[in-house]
Amino acid sequence: MSLSIGIVGLPNVGKSTLFKALTKNPVDINNYPFCTIEPNVGIVEVPDERLSKIADISQPAKIIPTVIEFVDIAGLVKGAAEGEGLGNKFLANIREVDAIIQVVRVFANDNITHVYEKIDPASDIETINTELILADLETVQKVEARLEKEARGQDEGAAAQLVVVQKIKKALGSGQLAREVGLDMGDEATQVVIRELSLLTMKPVLHVYNVADVDENLPADLTGRDHIKLDIKTEEDLLEMESAEIAELGVKSELDQLVVKSYELLGLITFFTTGSDETRAWTIVKGSTAPEAGGAIHTDFTEKFVRAEVMAYKDFVAVGSESAARDQGLLKSCGRDYIVQDGDIIEFKI
Figure 1 (cartoon, rainbow, N blue to C red):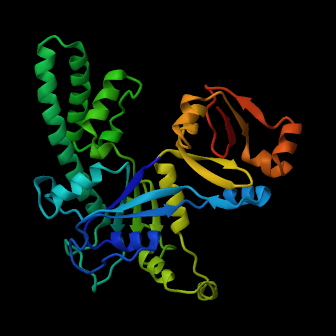
Figure 2 (figure 1 turned 135 degrees about the vertical axis):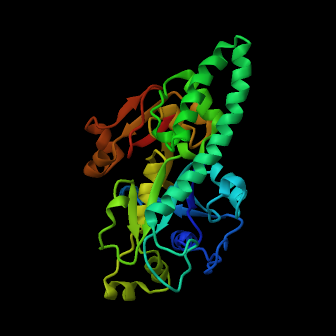
């Protein structure tokens, strides 16, 4: 499964520095707008202590974690929806990712230029949201015009979709993000519209507040959003230090917390396979059935699925082996309708 998270924000807020710290990849980091033009892409391991504990029992030849793809996208400025700065490139790149990390500058530093020459995190968030809304409005208006024509031709499907599109348009026009509209996601017309529009403001967002001190309180107008605080410059500095030096300083990286929250933001869970050859973590969307989960391994596991033998992680670790789990009735045989749970250890039968 290939799902990605775009790291976005205004220029000079710490996007590329965060990307470097996350991926351990050197990227161009300079104190001027639009340092990042083409997006940098990096793969990051998702920390999960369950994987090592399963491996301790199975003693496999290989241990393979699950990963997330992060994309460092060019900085956005006011007017991006009309093509200002690298607006068109920014919007095209962000449309391709599945979720967004919005980096927001909270720290003050006279040596690092702010594109608007003042530190105002709430205003910066509003600038980005406004540009995404304007881009979405343009998309919605084009689809609305087509659906109006089709609805006049007595196309019932188009008429139903038009109602949804107009509801979204009204919300966007009032400054509301599409993900906040309260759409009926079980409705067929809504599903068709959401797929076609691919709205920027429908994507889930996690705010990363780039602070000088993670222990300091945030301004009240920032706390109502899903967020994490990071001292991104310190995270970069930690890359250059030996583990003994880090321990001596008593500094702890918060990047693992960000990666885990990013994984959750995408609506993902993990299941495991294990044996003498390999213990591996697999990524699936929450709510996947057993055959769908099998498809993460190979399409044959979906198409030729017979059953899945499933152990809960906590049971496997508690009893110490598959045979003990089977003897104690903790290994269950599941059919096509079984919904895989986070932490399941599965053997597929095809």
